[in-house]
Image 1 (cartoon, helix red, strand yellow):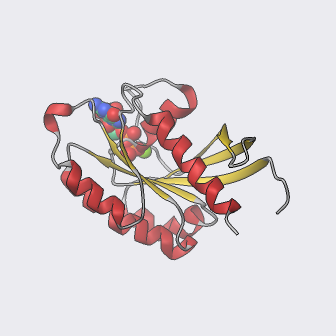
Image 2 (tube, helix red, strand yellow; image 1 turned 90 degrees about the horizontal axis):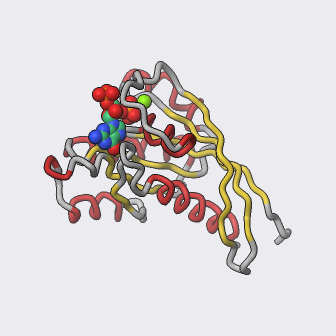
Length: 181
Ligand code: G3D
Ligand code: MG
């Protein structure tokens, strides 16, 4: 295998409307949170450089292209091919205060896999700052994640909790998969 130390990856964020996809990306890119942010009007592409550790101890630079997709179902049908095409990793985002957004992730992941084949998935249970409004337990989250061999993490785009970790872990999963024979 050639000794690559740079790679480019495309990842998508999916999940129902208002789970926090756009805020998550904004937090990751700018490390800030804007409560006044208005819903995305289309897909937006952002870029970020990451470094992941290689098995041999060296570093691998990952140029990540992050696609933000609207939650509306009609939109999904119309443009999903174009937006999911070539994606190598998926952040599947739900809102801990809305149980249905967890189970809707199956439909989202299925739609993506139809275009990309199976790719690494990382589940994000967002809005964990709203602890008193949690609508499903960890076992339920674990079960959904297990279906895709996906890790899961509780995040808050509002406080920034675990946002970096989710992107970092997904980058590692993608890198590992590419290095596999
Ligand atoms: P989407 O891109 O998935 O549709 P957004 O979702 O990122 O636009 O976020 C939807 C709403 O949830 C926004 O509220 C945003 O401020 C809020 N939000 C996102 N992440 C978090 C979080 O971690 N904690 C809390 N408490 N709120 C969050 P508004 O009221 O602006 O529509
Ligand atoms: Mg959005």
